[in-house]
Image 1 (cartoon, rainbow, N blue to C red):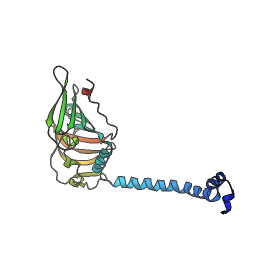
Image 2: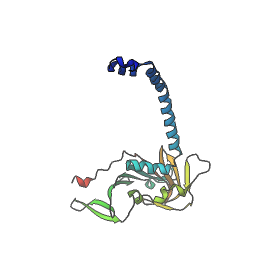
Image 3: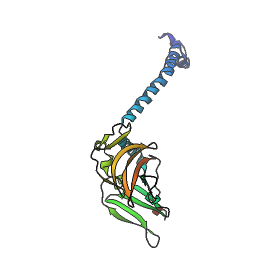
Image 4: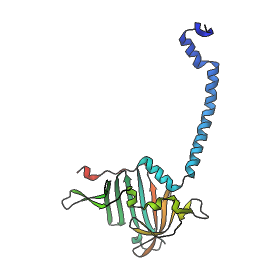
Length: 229
């Protein structure tokens, strides 16, 4: 018979969790776990930093399925007229997309789209105030391609900008269409903490800078108004 078998089971269990060896083990773990957790956090942080920013966009989108794109067009110089300023806010939430455009002070419009099996449908109100929808583009890809060509989100098409720590530029410096704009000198940078595409464009005959930023992953929601009508 084992030496401690004469003690009741409850005492043996109590000793198991309060004995000298157990206390030493718990004390050792108490010291090591914070260090191991810190090492893990630092390792994951370094791995995340090493990921290309365009891959970060795709990775976040893969896990959240929603985010916001903000397109800002501003005069290239502060002396240009304010009519050269346009703003577009695009909320992508799964297969839904809400586009809010502010072209001028008195030109403020919101559009709704839905990605379905055979393409992208636009939802709109008819003359009687009833919601209708029509197919506007046949596609077999993500709704994001409706706004931004997929090749602009492909890291293999970029190279690092010399002399800049966090900037990449297109290898082939061609003009590309982004939303409604023809954009040149496209780069990937951080703007106000967000990953963004920046470049040069024109608006109403004036030279402008355009910024397309990606943000609010997992915090972007589209409420389709036609479901409540």
